[in-house]
Image (cartoon, rainbow, N blue to C red; front, top):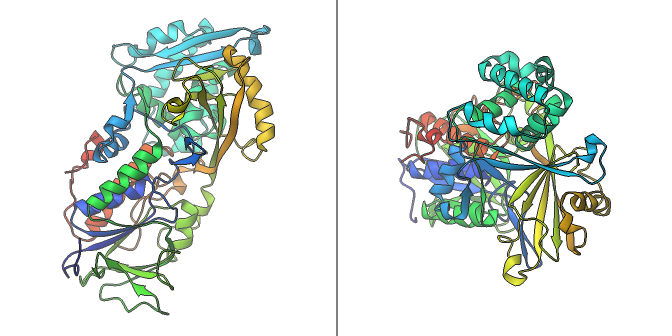
Length: 511
Protein backbone atom coordinates (compact mmCIF):
# COMPACT_ATOMS: atom_id res chain seq x y z
CA UNK A 1 0.00 0.00 0.00
CA UNK A 2 1.57 3.29 -1.03
CA UNK A 3 0.74 6.85 -1.91
CA UNK A 4 -1.21 9.41 0.09
CA UNK A 5 -3.98 7.96 2.21
CA UNK A 6 -7.28 9.32 0.84
CA UNK A 7 -8.79 12.08 2.95
CA UNK A 8 -11.98 10.11 3.51
CA UNK A 9 -10.13 6.98 4.62
CA UNK A 10 -10.02 6.50 8.38
CA UNK A 11 -6.74 5.71 10.08
CA UNK A 12 -5.93 3.70 13.20
CA UNK A 13 -2.99 3.00 15.46
CA UNK A 14 -2.87 -0.21 17.50
CA UNK A 15 -0.41 -0.08 20.39
CA UNK A 16 0.62 -3.59 21.38
CA UNK A 17 1.39 -6.64 19.23
CA UNK A 18 0.00 -9.40 21.43
CA UNK A 19 -3.01 -11.47 20.43
CA UNK A 20 -5.41 -8.65 21.27
CA UNK A 21 -3.49 -6.14 19.16
CA UNK A 22 -3.04 -8.54 16.25
CA UNK A 23 -6.78 -9.26 16.24
CA UNK A 24 -7.78 -5.60 16.42
CA UNK A 25 -5.32 -4.57 13.70
CA UNK A 26 -6.53 -7.26 11.29
CA UNK A 27 -10.17 -6.42 11.92
CA UNK A 28 -9.64 -2.68 11.38
CA UNK A 29 -7.58 -3.25 8.25
CA UNK A 30 -10.23 -5.55 6.83
CA UNK A 31 -12.82 -2.84 7.51
CA UNK A 32 -10.86 -0.50 5.22
CA UNK A 33 -8.80 1.54 7.71
CA UNK A 34 -5.14 2.35 7.20
CA UNK A 35 -3.55 0.74 10.26
CA UNK A 36 -0.19 0.95 12.01
CA UNK A 37 0.64 -1.56 14.74
CA UNK A 38 3.28 -0.56 17.29
CA UNK A 39 5.09 -3.18 19.38
CA UNK A 40 7.95 -2.49 21.79
CA UNK A 41 9.41 -5.99 21.54
CA UNK A 42 11.27 -7.32 18.50
CA UNK A 43 8.46 -9.82 17.93
CA UNK A 44 4.71 -10.23 17.97
CA UNK A 45 2.76 -12.57 20.22
CA UNK A 46 2.75 -10.79 23.58
CA UNK A 47 3.12 -13.28 26.44
CA UNK A 48 2.79 -16.35 24.20
CA UNK A 49 6.07 -16.44 22.28
CA UNK A 50 9.17 -18.46 21.40
CA UNK A 51 12.90 -17.87 21.58
CA UNK A 52 16.10 -19.70 20.70
CA UNK A 53 18.30 -21.41 23.28
CA UNK A 54 21.24 -22.91 21.45
CA UNK A 55 19.71 -25.34 18.97
CA UNK A 56 16.36 -25.49 20.80
CA UNK A 57 13.30 -23.43 19.95
CA UNK A 58 11.67 -22.75 23.31
CA UNK A 59 8.17 -21.50 24.09
CA UNK A 60 8.18 -19.21 27.10
CA UNK A 61 5.43 -21.35 28.60
CA UNK A 62 2.95 -24.07 27.76
CA UNK A 63 -0.12 -22.39 26.30
CA UNK A 64 -3.13 -24.59 25.58
CA UNK A 65 -6.65 -23.80 24.43
CA UNK A 66 -10.00 -25.60 24.55
CA UNK A 67 -12.54 -26.37 21.87
CA UNK A 68 -14.76 -23.69 23.41
CA UNK A 69 -12.06 -21.07 22.69
CA UNK A 70 -13.79 -20.15 19.46
CA UNK A 71 -12.26 -16.68 19.10
CA UNK A 72 -8.66 -17.92 19.45
CA UNK A 73 -9.35 -20.80 17.09
CA UNK A 74 -10.84 -18.29 14.64
CA UNK A 75 -7.65 -16.23 14.81
CA UNK A 76 -5.52 -19.32 14.14
CA UNK A 77 -7.66 -20.02 11.07
CA UNK A 78 -7.36 -16.39 9.93
CA UNK A 79 -3.57 -16.66 10.20
CA UNK A 80 -3.60 -19.80 8.03
CA UNK A 81 -2.16 -21.82 10.90
CA UNK A 82 -4.74 -24.57 11.45
CA UNK A 83 -2.18 -27.15 10.38
CA UNK A 84 0.12 -26.01 13.20
CA UNK A 85 -2.23 -26.93 16.07
CA UNK A 86 -3.85 -30.11 17.38
CA UNK A 87 -7.16 -30.58 19.18
CA UNK A 88 -8.18 -33.69 21.11
CA UNK A 89 -11.03 -35.68 19.60
CA UNK A 90 -12.33 -36.04 23.16
CA UNK A 91 -11.11 -34.68 26.47
CA UNK A 92 -8.58 -37.03 28.07
CA UNK A 93 -6.36 -35.83 30.92
CA UNK A 94 -4.00 -38.31 32.62
CA UNK A 95 -3.66 -37.46 36.34
CA UNK A 96 -0.74 -39.10 38.13
CA UNK A 97 -0.91 -39.23 41.93
CA UNK A 98 2.10 -39.83 44.13
CA UNK A 99 0.00 -42.07 46.38
CA UNK A 100 2.48 -42.01 49.23
CA UNK A 101 1.75 -38.31 49.71
CA UNK A 102 -1.62 -39.12 51.28
CA UNK A 103 -1.83 -42.85 51.97
CA UNK A 104 1.38 -43.52 53.86
CA UNK A 105 3.05 -45.37 51.00
CA UNK A 106 6.59 -44.75 49.88
CA UNK A 107 6.83 -45.13 46.15
CA UNK A 108 3.34 -45.75 44.87
CA UNK A 109 2.07 -44.07 41.71
CA UNK A 110 -1.59 -44.14 40.76
CA UNK A 111 -2.90 -43.08 37.37
CA UNK A 112 -6.39 -41.69 36.89
CA UNK A 113 -8.00 -40.05 33.89
CA UNK A 114 -10.53 -37.31 33.37
CA UNK A 115 -12.29 -38.12 30.11
CA UNK A 116 -15.56 -37.34 28.42
CA UNK A 117 -17.94 -39.73 26.73
CA UNK A 118 -20.14 -39.15 23.68
CA UNK A 119 -23.09 -38.23 25.87
CA UNK A 120 -24.95 -34.98 26.54
CA UNK A 121 -23.99 -32.61 29.35
CA UNK A 122 -23.56 -33.42 32.23
CA UNK A 123 -23.59 -37.17 31.58
CA UNK A 124 -20.50 -36.83 29.37
CA UNK A 125 -18.29 -36.71 32.49
CA UNK A 126 -20.30 -39.00 34.78
CA UNK A 127 -18.55 -42.21 33.85
CA UNK A 128 -15.09 -40.71 34.21
CA UNK A 129 -15.93 -39.25 37.61
CA UNK A 130 -17.36 -42.53 38.85
CA UNK A 131 -14.06 -44.24 38.05
CA UNK A 132 -11.74 -41.42 39.12
CA UNK A 133 -9.42 -43.13 41.63
CA UNK A 134 -8.15 -39.95 43.29
CA UNK A 135 -11.45 -39.29 45.07
CA UNK A 136 -13.36 -41.37 47.60
CA UNK A 137 -16.92 -42.46 46.87
CA UNK A 138 -18.20 -39.83 49.32
CA UNK A 139 -16.16 -37.12 47.59
CA UNK A 140 -17.49 -38.13 44.18
CA UNK A 141 -21.07 -37.80 45.37
CA UNK A 142 -20.33 -34.38 46.84
CA UNK A 143 -18.67 -33.31 43.58
CA UNK A 144 -21.84 -34.22 41.69
CA UNK A 145 -23.92 -32.08 44.06
CA UNK A 146 -21.51 -29.16 43.73
CA UNK A 147 -21.47 -29.48 39.94
CA UNK A 148 -25.26 -29.26 39.79
CA UNK A 149 -25.17 -26.22 42.11
CA UNK A 150 -22.51 -24.64 39.90
CA UNK A 151 -24.64 -25.27 36.83
CA UNK A 152 -27.47 -23.27 38.45
CA UNK A 153 -25.34 -20.19 39.20
CA UNK A 154 -26.23 -17.05 37.27
CA UNK A 155 -23.04 -15.63 35.77
CA UNK A 156 -24.72 -12.23 35.49
CA UNK A 157 -25.07 -12.01 39.28
CA UNK A 158 -22.49 -9.39 40.40
CA UNK A 159 -22.39 -10.82 43.93
CA UNK A 160 -20.50 -13.87 42.62
CA UNK A 161 -17.43 -11.69 42.12
CA UNK A 162 -17.35 -10.75 45.81
CA UNK A 163 -16.98 -14.36 47.00
CA UNK A 164 -14.02 -16.69 46.67
CA UNK A 165 -14.43 -19.98 44.86
CA UNK A 166 -12.88 -21.76 47.83
CA UNK A 167 -15.51 -20.43 50.25
CA UNK A 168 -18.27 -21.49 47.87
CA UNK A 169 -16.78 -24.99 47.45
CA UNK A 170 -16.64 -25.47 51.22
CA UNK A 171 -20.27 -24.35 51.47
CA UNK A 172 -21.05 -27.15 49.01
CA UNK A 173 -19.36 -29.78 51.15
CA UNK A 174 -16.17 -30.12 49.11
CA UNK A 175 -13.31 -31.70 51.02
CA UNK A 176 -9.73 -30.55 50.88
CA UNK A 177 -8.93 -33.62 48.79
CA UNK A 178 -11.73 -32.86 46.30
CA UNK A 179 -10.45 -29.32 45.88
CA UNK A 180 -6.89 -30.56 45.29
CA UNK A 181 -7.71 -33.52 43.04
CA UNK A 182 -10.36 -31.89 40.87
CA UNK A 183 -11.31 -28.23 41.32
CA UNK A 184 -7.78 -26.84 41.70
CA UNK A 185 -6.38 -29.34 39.22
CA UNK A 186 -8.42 -27.58 36.54
CA UNK A 187 -8.81 -24.15 38.12
CA UNK A 188 -5.18 -23.31 38.87
CA UNK A 189 -4.16 -24.04 35.28
CA UNK A 190 -6.95 -21.97 33.73
CA UNK A 191 -7.32 -19.16 36.29
CA UNK A 192 -3.73 -18.86 37.59
CA UNK A 193 -4.98 -18.92 41.17
CA UNK A 194 -6.06 -21.46 43.76
CA UNK A 195 -9.73 -21.74 44.73
CA UNK A 196 -9.24 -19.53 47.79
CA UNK A 197 -7.58 -16.82 45.72
CA UNK A 198 -10.05 -16.60 42.82
CA UNK A 199 -13.37 -14.92 42.28
CA UNK A 200 -16.34 -17.27 42.23
CA UNK A 201 -17.61 -15.40 39.16
CA UNK A 202 -14.52 -16.24 37.10
CA UNK A 203 -14.29 -19.81 38.38
CA UNK A 204 -17.96 -20.43 37.64
CA UNK A 205 -17.50 -19.03 34.14
CA UNK A 206 -14.56 -21.39 33.48
CA UNK A 207 -16.26 -24.53 34.74
CA UNK A 208 -19.68 -23.75 33.26
CA UNK A 209 -18.22 -22.86 29.85
CA UNK A 210 -15.52 -25.50 29.69
CA UNK A 211 -17.27 -28.46 31.31
CA UNK A 212 -21.00 -27.80 31.37
CA UNK A 213 -21.90 -25.95 28.15
CA UNK A 214 -21.25 -28.52 25.44
CA UNK A 215 -19.84 -32.07 25.58
CA UNK A 216 -16.80 -31.12 23.50
CA UNK A 217 -16.13 -27.71 25.02
CA UNK A 218 -13.27 -28.91 27.22
CA UNK A 219 -11.33 -30.86 24.58
CA UNK A 220 -7.73 -29.63 24.83
CA UNK A 221 -5.74 -28.10 21.99
CA UNK A 222 -2.09 -27.13 21.71
CA UNK A 223 0.48 -25.88 19.23
CA UNK A 224 2.42 -28.46 17.22
CA UNK A 225 4.90 -25.78 16.17
CA UNK A 226 6.71 -23.14 18.21
CA UNK A 227 4.33 -20.41 19.34
CA UNK A 228 6.45 -17.87 17.48
CA UNK A 229 5.70 -19.63 14.20
CA UNK A 230 2.00 -18.93 14.76
CA UNK A 231 1.90 -15.73 16.81
CA UNK A 232 4.80 -13.94 15.10
CA UNK A 233 5.62 -15.44 11.70
CA UNK A 234 2.07 -16.21 10.54
CA UNK A 235 0.66 -13.10 12.24
CA UNK A 236 3.24 -10.78 10.69
CA UNK A 237 2.57 -12.24 7.26
CA UNK A 238 -1.21 -11.81 7.69
CA UNK A 239 -0.86 -8.25 8.95
CA UNK A 240 1.41 -7.19 6.13
CA UNK A 241 -0.80 -8.83 3.52
CA UNK A 242 -3.69 -6.84 4.98
CA UNK A 243 -1.74 -3.62 4.49
CA UNK A 244 -0.94 -3.06 8.18
CA UNK A 245 2.27 -1.16 8.82
CA UNK A 246 4.08 -3.05 11.62
CA UNK A 247 6.63 -1.21 13.76
CA UNK A 248 8.67 -3.55 15.98
CA UNK A 249 11.09 -2.32 18.65
CA UNK A 250 8.94 0.81 18.81
CA UNK A 251 7.54 2.15 22.08
CA UNK A 252 4.54 4.43 22.45
CA UNK A 253 5.70 7.14 24.84
CA UNK A 254 2.75 9.55 24.77
CA UNK A 255 -0.88 9.64 23.72
CA UNK A 256 -3.01 12.74 23.19
CA UNK A 257 -6.59 13.18 22.05
CA UNK A 258 -8.44 16.28 20.89
CA UNK A 259 -11.84 17.19 19.47
CA UNK A 260 -12.47 16.81 15.73
CA UNK A 261 -10.37 18.79 13.32
CA UNK A 262 -6.84 18.63 11.94
CA UNK A 263 -3.97 17.94 14.29
CA UNK A 264 -1.09 20.33 14.74
CA UNK A 265 2.29 19.34 13.45
CA UNK A 266 4.46 17.24 15.70
CA UNK A 267 5.57 19.34 18.66
CA UNK A 268 9.23 19.56 19.42
CA UNK A 269 10.39 18.12 16.14
CA UNK A 270 10.06 14.48 15.15
CA UNK A 271 8.27 13.11 12.13
CA UNK A 272 4.63 12.83 11.15
CA UNK A 273 3.99 9.14 10.60
CA UNK A 274 3.66 7.71 7.12
CA UNK A 275 1.86 4.68 5.76
CA UNK A 276 3.79 3.22 2.89
CA UNK A 277 5.25 6.24 1.10
CA UNK A 278 2.33 8.57 1.83
CA UNK A 279 1.39 10.82 4.70
CA UNK A 280 -0.44 8.87 7.41
CA UNK A 281 -2.94 11.55 8.38
CA UNK A 282 -6.67 11.67 8.03
CA UNK A 283 -8.61 14.80 7.16
CA UNK A 284 -11.91 13.48 8.51
CA UNK A 285 -14.02 15.97 10.42
CA UNK A 286 -16.40 15.50 13.31
CA UNK A 287 -14.38 12.84 15.14
CA UNK A 288 -11.94 13.07 18.00
CA UNK A 289 -8.38 12.98 16.73
CA UNK A 290 -5.53 11.16 18.40
CA UNK A 291 -1.76 11.37 18.26
CA UNK A 292 0.65 8.72 19.51
CA UNK A 293 4.34 9.52 19.90
CA UNK A 294 6.43 6.49 19.05
CA UNK A 295 10.14 6.09 19.79
CA UNK A 296 12.56 3.34 18.87
CA UNK A 297 16.07 2.64 17.72
CA UNK A 298 14.81 1.89 14.20
CA UNK A 299 12.89 5.15 13.94
CA UNK A 300 14.25 8.60 13.03
CA UNK A 301 15.72 10.75 15.79
CA UNK A 302 12.88 12.25 17.79
CA UNK A 303 10.61 9.37 16.84
CA UNK A 304 7.33 9.64 14.95
CA UNK A 305 4.04 11.23 15.80
CA UNK A 306 1.26 8.97 14.54
CA UNK A 307 -2.02 10.80 13.85
CA UNK A 308 -5.13 8.64 13.72
CA UNK A 309 -8.90 8.62 13.93
CA UNK A 310 -8.84 5.60 16.23
CA UNK A 311 -6.33 4.23 18.73
CA UNK A 312 -6.44 0.78 20.30
CA UNK A 313 -4.37 0.41 23.47
CA UNK A 314 -3.68 -3.34 23.55
CA UNK A 315 -1.06 -3.19 26.30
CA UNK A 316 -0.81 -4.43 29.92
CA UNK A 317 -2.98 -2.59 32.42
CA UNK A 318 -0.11 -0.70 34.04
CA UNK A 319 1.12 0.52 30.65
CA UNK A 320 -2.41 1.56 29.74
CA UNK A 321 -2.64 3.53 33.00
CA UNK A 322 0.56 5.37 32.08
CA UNK A 323 -0.54 6.19 28.51
CA UNK A 324 -4.20 7.10 28.97
CA UNK A 325 -4.96 10.83 29.23
CA UNK A 326 -6.47 11.76 32.63
CA UNK A 327 -10.12 10.81 33.25
CA UNK A 328 -10.39 8.69 30.11
CA UNK A 329 -12.29 6.00 32.04
CA UNK A 330 -14.17 6.02 35.33
CA UNK A 331 -11.91 5.63 38.37
CA UNK A 332 -8.83 5.34 36.18
CA UNK A 333 -6.55 4.43 39.11
CA UNK A 334 -8.34 1.09 39.37
CA UNK A 335 -6.07 -0.16 36.59
CA UNK A 336 -3.18 -0.03 39.05
CA UNK A 337 -5.23 -1.94 41.64
CA UNK A 338 -6.00 -4.91 39.42
CA UNK A 339 -2.70 -6.66 40.18
CA UNK A 340 -0.92 -9.48 38.42
CA UNK A 341 -0.13 -13.16 39.02
CA UNK A 342 2.98 -15.11 37.94
CA UNK A 343 3.58 -18.33 36.01
CA UNK A 344 6.82 -20.30 36.25
CA UNK A 345 8.01 -22.82 33.67
CA UNK A 346 10.77 -25.35 34.24
CA UNK A 347 12.47 -26.93 31.24
CA UNK A 348 14.46 -30.19 31.38
CA UNK A 349 16.24 -32.08 28.61
CA UNK A 350 17.01 -35.74 29.33
CA UNK A 351 19.32 -38.07 27.44
CA UNK A 352 16.49 -40.57 26.92
CA UNK A 353 12.70 -40.75 26.77
CA UNK A 354 11.16 -40.44 30.22
CA UNK A 355 7.55 -39.49 29.28
CA UNK A 356 5.37 -41.61 26.99
CA UNK A 357 2.33 -39.34 26.70
CA UNK A 358 1.89 -35.77 25.43
CA UNK A 359 1.13 -34.40 28.90
CA UNK A 360 -0.13 -35.23 32.37
CA UNK A 361 -1.13 -33.49 35.60
CA UNK A 362 0.38 -34.26 38.99
CA UNK A 363 -1.17 -34.77 42.44
CA UNK A 364 0.56 -35.15 45.80
CA UNK A 365 3.55 -33.32 44.36
CA UNK A 366 4.55 -29.71 43.71
CA UNK A 367 4.57 -30.56 39.99
CA UNK A 368 1.36 -29.28 38.37
CA UNK A 369 1.43 -30.06 34.62
CA UNK A 370 4.13 -31.74 32.50
CA UNK A 371 4.33 -31.56 28.70
CA UNK A 372 6.49 -33.27 26.08
CA UNK A 373 8.12 -30.52 24.00
CA UNK A 374 10.63 -32.69 22.11
CA UNK A 375 9.29 -32.56 18.57
CA UNK A 376 8.37 -28.94 18.04
CA UNK A 377 11.49 -27.65 19.83
CA UNK A 378 13.64 -29.19 17.08
CA UNK A 379 15.37 -31.60 19.50
CA UNK A 380 13.95 -34.70 17.81
CA UNK A 381 15.60 -33.78 14.51
CA UNK A 382 19.09 -33.85 15.95
CA UNK A 383 18.83 -36.42 18.77
CA UNK A 384 16.20 -39.12 18.47
CA UNK A 385 16.97 -40.52 21.91
CA UNK A 386 16.75 -37.34 24.00
CA UNK A 387 13.55 -35.82 25.35
CA UNK A 388 12.63 -32.27 26.33
CA UNK A 389 9.84 -31.81 28.87
CA UNK A 390 8.39 -28.65 30.38
CA UNK A 391 6.76 -28.23 33.77
CA UNK A 392 4.11 -25.50 33.96
CA UNK A 393 3.57 -24.00 37.43
CA UNK A 394 0.72 -21.52 37.71
CA UNK A 395 0.05 -19.27 40.72
CA UNK A 396 3.78 -19.53 41.47
CA UNK A 397 3.97 -16.59 43.86
CA UNK A 398 6.33 -18.30 46.30
CA UNK A 399 8.74 -19.66 43.69
CA UNK A 400 8.83 -17.13 40.88
CA UNK A 401 12.05 -15.47 42.08
CA UNK A 402 13.91 -18.54 43.38
CA UNK A 403 17.36 -19.18 41.85
CA UNK A 404 17.58 -21.77 39.09
CA UNK A 405 19.81 -23.99 41.27
CA UNK A 406 17.16 -24.12 44.00
CA UNK A 407 14.40 -24.91 41.50
CA UNK A 408 16.55 -27.66 40.05
CA UNK A 409 17.04 -29.17 43.53
CA UNK A 410 13.29 -29.03 44.15
CA UNK A 411 11.88 -30.28 40.88
CA UNK A 412 14.23 -32.84 39.36
CA UNK A 413 13.66 -35.27 42.26
CA UNK A 414 9.92 -34.70 41.93
CA UNK A 415 10.06 -35.54 38.23
CA UNK A 416 11.99 -38.69 39.12
CA UNK A 417 9.19 -39.66 41.55
CA UNK A 418 6.57 -39.19 38.85
CA UNK A 419 8.56 -40.61 35.94
CA UNK A 420 10.50 -43.75 36.88
CA UNK A 421 12.46 -43.63 33.62
CA UNK A 422 13.91 -40.28 34.71
CA UNK A 423 15.61 -41.83 37.73
CA UNK A 424 18.47 -43.27 35.70
CA UNK A 425 18.45 -40.62 32.98
CA UNK A 426 21.05 -37.89 32.66
CA UNK A 427 19.85 -34.29 32.60
CA UNK A 428 21.47 -32.58 29.62
CA UNK A 429 19.99 -29.14 30.32
CA UNK A 430 17.75 -27.45 32.88
CA UNK A 431 16.53 -23.88 32.63
CA UNK A 432 13.68 -21.68 33.76
CA UNK A 433 11.36 -19.14 32.14
CA UNK A 434 9.46 -16.72 34.35
CA UNK A 435 6.48 -14.53 33.61
CA UNK A 436 6.12 -12.46 36.77
CA UNK A 437 3.10 -10.61 35.38
CA UNK A 438 1.63 -13.44 33.33
CA UNK A 439 -2.03 -12.65 34.03
CA UNK A 440 -4.17 -10.20 35.90
CA UNK A 441 -4.96 -11.22 39.48
CA UNK A 442 -8.37 -12.98 39.37
CA UNK A 443 -9.10 -12.36 43.05
CA UNK A 444 -12.59 -11.71 44.41
CA UNK A 445 -13.57 -8.16 43.48
CA UNK A 446 -11.47 -8.14 40.30
CA UNK A 447 -14.49 -7.77 37.98
CA UNK A 448 -15.16 -4.19 39.07
CA UNK A 449 -11.53 -3.31 38.31
CA UNK A 450 -11.67 -4.51 34.68
CA UNK A 451 -12.78 -1.79 32.23
CA UNK A 452 -14.62 -2.40 29.00
CA UNK A 453 -13.21 -1.54 25.59
CA UNK A 454 -14.99 1.83 25.36
CA UNK A 455 -13.54 4.95 26.97
CA UNK A 456 -14.94 8.47 27.35
CA UNK A 457 -13.00 9.51 24.26
CA UNK A 458 -14.61 8.26 21.03
CA UNK A 459 -12.18 6.24 18.97
CA UNK A 460 -9.82 5.56 21.90
CA UNK A 461 -10.42 1.99 23.04
CA UNK A 462 -8.83 -0.62 25.28
CA UNK A 463 -7.91 -4.22 24.56
CA UNK A 464 -6.16 -6.99 26.45
CA UNK A 465 -7.08 -10.10 28.40
CA UNK A 466 -7.33 -7.90 31.52
CA UNK A 467 -10.29 -5.92 30.13
CA UNK A 468 -13.89 -6.91 30.89
CA UNK A 469 -14.23 -9.88 28.55
CA UNK A 470 -15.92 -12.13 31.12
CA UNK A 471 -13.04 -14.58 30.56
CA UNK A 472 -9.92 -15.13 32.68
CA UNK A 473 -6.54 -14.06 31.35
CA UNK A 474 -6.25 -16.54 28.49
CA UNK A 475 -5.42 -16.42 24.81
CA UNK A 476 -9.16 -16.63 24.20
CA UNK A 477 -9.82 -13.62 26.40
CA UNK A 478 -7.12 -11.63 24.62
CA UNK A 479 -8.54 -12.34 21.15
CA UNK A 480 -12.09 -11.56 22.27
CA UNK A 481 -10.90 -8.23 23.63
CA UNK A 482 -9.33 -7.43 20.26
CA UNK A 483 -12.64 -8.05 18.52
CA UNK A 484 -14.50 -5.89 21.05
CA UNK A 485 -11.98 -3.07 20.65
CA UNK A 486 -12.27 -3.17 16.85
CA UNK A 487 -16.06 -3.11 17.06
CA UNK A 488 -16.00 -0.09 19.40
CA UNK A 489 -13.49 1.79 17.23
CA UNK A 490 -15.52 1.19 14.08
CA UNK A 491 -18.75 2.23 15.78
CA UNK A 492 -17.13 5.44 17.04
CA UNK A 493 -16.04 6.30 13.50
CA UNK A 494 -19.43 5.54 12.03
CA UNK A 495 -17.88 2.76 9.99
CA UNK A 496 -19.79 -0.42 9.34
CA UNK A 497 -18.11 -3.23 11.31
CA UNK A 498 -16.86 -6.13 9.26
CA UNK A 499 -19.50 -8.30 10.93
CA UNK A 500 -22.01 -6.56 13.19
CA UNK A 501 -23.30 -9.93 14.40
CA UNK A 502 -19.92 -10.57 16.10
CA UNK A 503 -19.44 -13.88 14.32
CA UNK A 504 -16.13 -14.37 16.13
CA UNK A 505 -18.05 -15.58 19.16
CA UNK A 506 -19.17 -18.53 17.07
CA UNK A 507 -15.63 -19.32 16.01
CA UNK A 508 -15.76 -17.63 12.59
CA UNK A 509 -13.50 -14.76 11.66
CA UNK A 510 -15.69 -11.80 10.60
CA UNK A 511 -15.97 -11.52 6.83
